Length: 403
Image 1: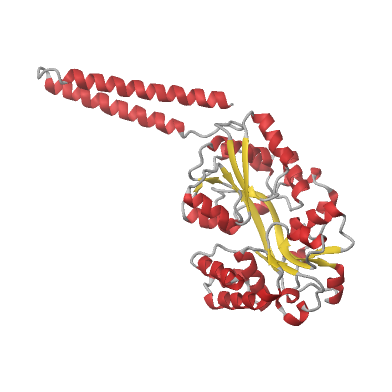
Image 2: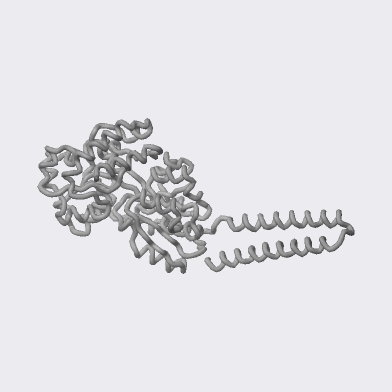
């Protein structure tokens, strides 16, 4: 539908230019003499006003909503590393006839910096829940056109009215998951069979780990893990503006730094199964994917610590300065298709918010408690709220810990 969209825009633009040209001729003609000046002035004003109104109408028409599947140019898609099956991108290109310029980032903050700076223009990004709220507050996201997203009906009602975007104006859920600890079964046995953040943050407990330990290179996640170990609620800490608790968590991270092998948000799952580390802080799907690819389920396990952890949802959103808005909507709707949504989850090993996709999702994913936690575990998980001014302090805590 790219040709149809571009033709429609060219016709509108031609009409607008013709109106402006006609107005210019009329103004010139009216200036040739003084006879009938009042009538001519009236005619000129009327013509100018009509042209301006029609031009505004044409410009408004350029912002008309997109048809389902309509594209308006190649898609610049900015996503997390290793977070979509290339086959899906190829299928979208084949279906639409456009190309996908796909690039990746390693943290919400990296993505935010790129969108804020405008150094590169993206049509579609995948911010996490708390980042959606921040980007809305800074006018960095464009409202979605749900007429172009008929497959939004496939989203589970459980994801309706989230606190970070209650009216669902700027985002559609992409994948969801949890943040916890991956470890060898030998380490879990040494802990008495119960996972705890102490294996990272308590020196005596960490001493039982024969190999290395890593943490996510992600300030909100790292600080949230420390808060849970210290007994704080992530939600209450952020929403009450408890800077003292944030700094206490930062001090704990700094005290922990010397016994960490690395901070890493990309290879943590691979590092665990390859033996580079025996304990890794990370995201559920990253571990599940690494375990599946290396058949490591008998030797390694993903756990949610007894103190609790983070649950999150990543979303699809369109930056305010996107060039190809219709193409972005087309990709969102494509990924919301039941079978495409399942293909996404069967690749990422994260939870799917797409209820219609469930029949097509692998049983080993649906039955994995690390991906779909049972109710008693789910109750110990918290979303990271939008941090506001505390966000800078949270970022500083990780920077100082690593220095």
